[in-house]
Image (cartoon, rainbow, N blue to C red; front, side, top):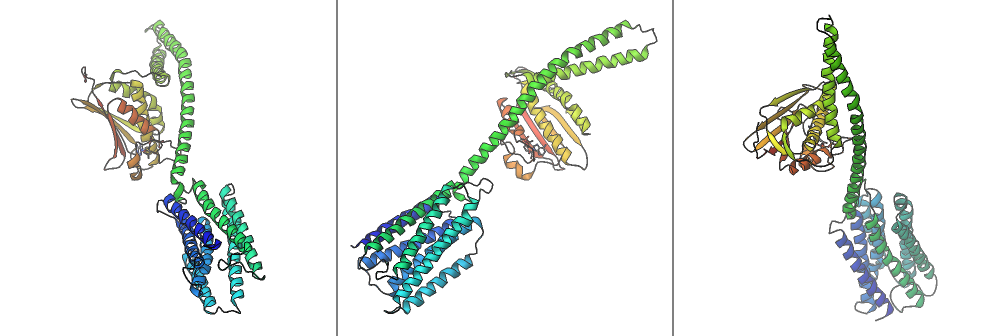
Length: 479
Ligand code: ADP
């Protein structure tokens, strides 16, 4: 076996294994760039196989056995060019087919007309076309691929490997004007062995660099573009979402601390106002013709006690850090939340209808349940605010059967987006431009900790409804 046969066999096996890697990496779902690259490898496999067979004298040297490897190398380089270009833009398959057919026709014409006097010119023309394709590939890496992936080391490698292949091509073109043209058959000369070894090494590293490039190409804005890296893109997106969530919860912690300290500072003057108003009210004798003043003082007392209970609720909501499961009255939990959200409802002109059909006692953490209710009310308010037409109303109802208390919040908003249904309670799933997608997930988590369940659905007449079921307290569930 001569040295050409050894090189041919080695390169044949290398290309075959590289194709296997490519197919396995894409799990047979090759995109167009990978398909062109695979086509190029297939051409090289055929080319190497024929060169091997010629050099072990298994087949005769004739127009067919010379033409096939010549054509295969040309087609392989065209495919590499397409593989690069279609990463950046949509390429028309028609032109690829046209190019390959034209090269096939050229090879057939050359081989039919090959004779003693013109074979040097055929070899030279072939070497010039291959070198031109190497130059085209260098251009594509440098001016098409690199601007899009300036930091990808493998694209840099591909560019320099293409440059190396241009050198190989030029050596072959020049050698045709000497007494020993560089062709992969016949007596292996030192120059031919060096040139083809160079070709084999450069091309092999081109395979590796292409796979390396495809693995390290991560475009998180267009994840569909690189099939190979979709899991990585998903992981990056998840990381970004977690980061956004972390920033939001950090903000929430800050606001909680602020609200808690504000509530603490407000409670002192509020108590003073209430006591002073009460004392002044008592000091005024009913007979002193101060009916107006008395009613004003009564109003101050009423308002300040309402404000005190609001502050008390806020302190509880923002200040509570430890879980406290106890017997709680569901109506009371709802009323405390309503105190907090009443001003928002008023400013957004939303009517609240309370439909308390029973007074169930459940076992749970009042503060956590308040958090759930606030999330649901906020979503209902958002949805109604988006819906500019029609009724602006939220219906809060409480019912129960022998084992469960059921609380529902129905709104007259736009209703749940059908696309959002499937992942309604999943973390970070939101349809709002500035939404976080944490509220419903957190609500579900809290309700499940209460052995309950939460569901969301749309009413036939529009608007969404969220229903929570929580087991009644075993020790006398209804008042
Ligand atoms: P966020 O409010 O930040 O989007 P949520 O987890 O609270 O996060 O809600 C997730 C998604 O559920 C919302 O983006 C919205 O599409 C949908 N959703 C929740 N409540 C309602 C509602 N009352 N009406 C319509 N859609 C809702």
